[in-house]
Image (tube, rainbow, N blue to C red; front, side):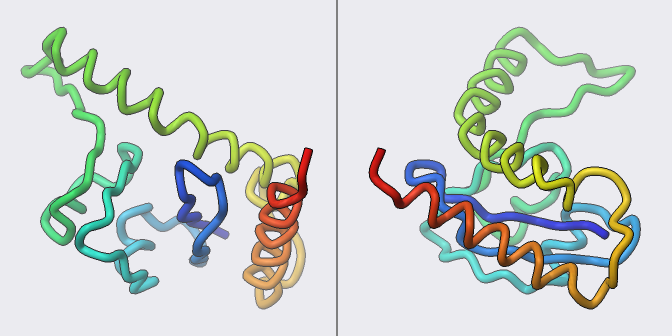
Length: 132
């Protein structure tokens, strides 16, 4: 099972989830989920979302190197800055992986995967809302 999380970078709240069956590309799952993102919202995605710029103008994805076109030092620095800005989002994903629902093979009923993922995301959002 494949899952996608949309996370608000400042509040670290999980806004939306989408799931797909089997091995599916991240960008294909985004298109199939028909997740609406406001045109003025800035998206900072990982390298799996290459090509999302055609549908959403305010998107930042890391540059990819190829065999004949290695990254310049400026592109490497831009990728590092983007990775540092995405770090809070990766921490949220790490928290969800602690419950082993996104890590490894999901061995339970496939129909309940979306429900269980949504419940874990709600649990995470609730724990983040509690005062420390």
